[in-house]
View 1 (cartoon, helix red, strand yellow):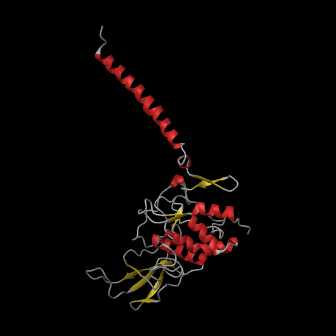
View 2: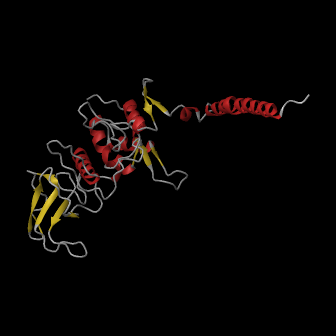
View 3: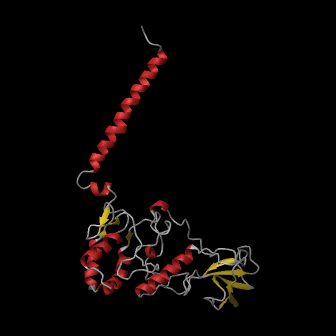
Length: 296
């Protein structure tokens, strides 16, 4: 006696479910796990965990860290990572970028009842100034003021059809809150004013001022900008070499020793042609702690 067709269809579906569960839910995961435990892959499959000389887990070689003190200031004996926009910094649960673009040049100055917000330009300028002071080099950059904010003017007056203001009637340094001294004394013959927090400057023409900073700053770009993920553990060789003298002084090492450690933790372009050479800061600092502990 033949079973009804609807029963046969349900039995076929149950058999397919059981077979696929065994193959895809048991056999395949076990096979992948077995391959991941093979030599050369086990560490990567386990999260690329790195440890201290004493065997304590220090993090992952794939996730950056902040090497700062309790006051938030950089520890001089450590190489510093690039900035991070992931949470409070390198938070895997808040991975992401600031999503600010090159046209984000105007700050929102804090005022009573209103929280301020730094533009991307001011963040870059502030970081460059701080890195320059830490490493003892010129931290100036184009379109940055000497006090570390974006050098941007708001120019008021009658506009032409092309959008310019040939005869300004008022000029404000948009990112320098009063009573700060504006980075320019005058613009087109008009005295430059500091900005009053809370004042609406939206009707003015935005004019970034390049200034006389070198076209190629001493502070590399990766020292002042965050990565797309906010978790990047790498910095450029240029940024690492910029920090090498400070680390050498703090640890009592020769500059040649520190530079050798930098080169040891440097990797080239992927497949020989993709990307740029990078230095893993987490591994580099762990190596220095192992070979030349800081006793300050």
